[in-house]
Amino acid sequence: MPGSSLFRQAVLALAGNRLISRVVRRFGMRLGAGRFVAAESLEAALVKVREMNSEGLMVTLDYLGENAQDPQLAEEAARMAIRALEKIDESRLNATVSVKLSQLGLKLGYDEALKNLRKVVEAARKHRNFVRIDMEDSSLTEATVRMFERLVEVYGTSHIGIVIQSYLYRSERDVRRLAARGANVRIVKGAYREPDTIAFPDMRDVDANYLKLVRHLLRKRCYTAVATHDEAIIDTVKLFADQEGIERNRFEFQMLYGVAGSLQRRLVDEGYRVRVYTPFGREWYPYFSRRIAERPANMFFVLKSLFRR
Image 1 (cartoon, one colour):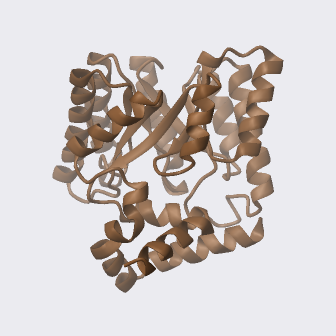
Image 2: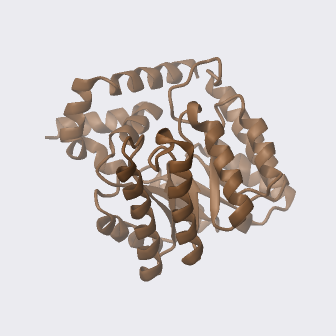
C-alpha cells in the first residue's frame, strides 16, 4: 500500500542520519536489535541454530556486513562464511550460509568479489553444503546475477543459489533467465529504498509479481525458497503446489529470525520445509534498519523495549 511504502522510505532516510546511527549503534542491541539479530559472535549464533534445529527448523546463517571498502575486510567476511560452513559440518547442524557481494568486495571490483565468493563456494562444496548470494540494492543487481551465472557454469546449482526481489520491474526477466539454468532461487519482496522508475511503488503490485515469480520457478521445476511472512501469499503458494502436484521437497518457506515464530512452527507441523534467515555479527545496523522499515509493528516493538527500561 502507498502508506507502507512512505513509512519504509521515511525510516530508511532517518537511518542514514549520522546522529541517529550513532545512538542506535551504541544502544540498539539493548533496545530491540537482539530480537532480529541472533548474536554478535558465530559461537553464540550456533547455539541458536541448534535450538531451532531441535524444533524442526532449518537455518541460513548470515554474517552481517556490507560495502567493504578494504580488501582485508572482504577477505575476512569470506573467511567467516567458510568458518561457519566448517562449524556447521563439525556440529552436524541443518544450516547453510548467505553472503552479500558488497561484503565480499564487489564495490572494490568485480574480480575481488568473485575471488572471495569462489572460496566460499569451494568450501560449501567441500562440506556438502550450500551458499546463497543475497540480493542488495538495484545498483548491484546485474553484477550479482552475472556472477551467479558464471559460478553456476563451474559448480552447478547444488551448492549455490541467488535471491530475486519482486519489487523490481526487471525481476520477471531475471527469473526467466535464471529458471532456464535450473537455478535455486529465493524470492523476497525487497527491503531497499528504490525509486518508482525501477520498482513498483504499490505493495499490491509487489505481491502480485511475487506470486508470478514463484509460480514460474515452481512450474520450471526450480527449487524455490518462498521468503515471506505474508500468510495470504503462503496460503496461495500452498494451494498452488497442491493443485500442480509439486512435491514439498521442491520448495521451502523462509522467514526472518525473530519474526512470526508461531507461523514457522505451524508450517513445520503441517509438513513443510521452513528455513530461518539468521543474522549474526557486530555490523547489524543496516540490517536492523531495514527490518524496522518493513513493518510499523517492528518499530512499536523497539519503542516498547525503550519504555520498559
